[in-house]
Structure formats: C-alpha cells, structure tokens
Length: 170
Image (cartoon, rainbow, N blue to C red; front, side, top):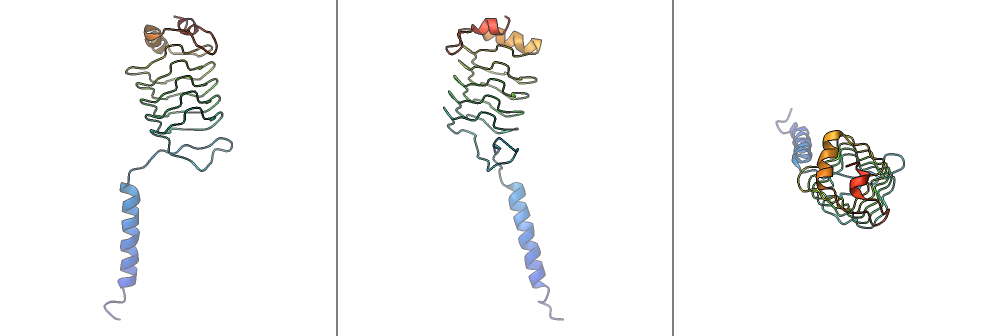
C-alpha cells in the first residue's frame, strides 16, 4: 500500500473538522420564526427597524430583539416568549393579547403601547423602562412587577384613552 493512499480520507476528515469548528465557534444571530405553522424563512431582528410593520400572530420565540424598533408595529397575538428585548422600542405598538411571557424588557420603551390582555408572566422590567401612556387593561401581573410598574406609571394611552395607572390598578 502506498504511504499517500490514506491522504484523501485525512483531507476529508480535516475539512469536516474545520467546518464543524467554524459552525461551533461562529457568532450566531437569533432568528425570528414567522407565524402560521411554526416554521418560516426567519429574519434577524436585533437592532433592526420594524416600525409600523404588521407582525400580528407571528412567533418570535426567544428572539434576539435587542435595540429593535417596533414603534407603532402591530404585534397583536404575537408570541415573543423568552425574547431578549433590551433597549427595544415598542412605542405606540399594539401588543393586544400578545404572549410576552419571560421577555426581558430591560431599558425598553413601552410608552403609548396597548398591551390589553397580554400575557406577561415572568417578564423582566429592569433598568429605565418607559411605560408612560401604555394601556395594561386585563394584564395579570405579579405583585412585585405591578409595584415596580406603578412606581413609574404616568399618562393616558392616546389610542384607547385609558389611564396607565388605572389600567395597572395602582
């Protein structure tokens, strides 16, 4: 047997190892999954401008939404379960009946948003969260979260006319 006859197998193994290392070590972006059947083409959303878009009913499970602009977007019935929304803007967004369970809203802007009927169990509201003029009608909150939100609540929602403090039962 020729001493070089094992080279094709060694080259293939080295190539496979390099490809696996590249996939393992490369930074991964979070991908959003479209609504309907739980599959879709997916688009990276972190730091993007989604202002005014209709994402009603979309599934954005554990999506990286850092710094994303959802101003005046329609996210009614959407699922953002476990999403990372640090520094994101939902100013004037429609989040009616949205699944916001376990979302990290650190420093997020929820001013003038309509969250009527949204699920926010275990959502985190750390840092400088802005909820001025937001509507929390029929949103069930943990007492500690309600207390925090009441400490910063102010204004009236321009769409529904509901007072933010009243909608939070402050």
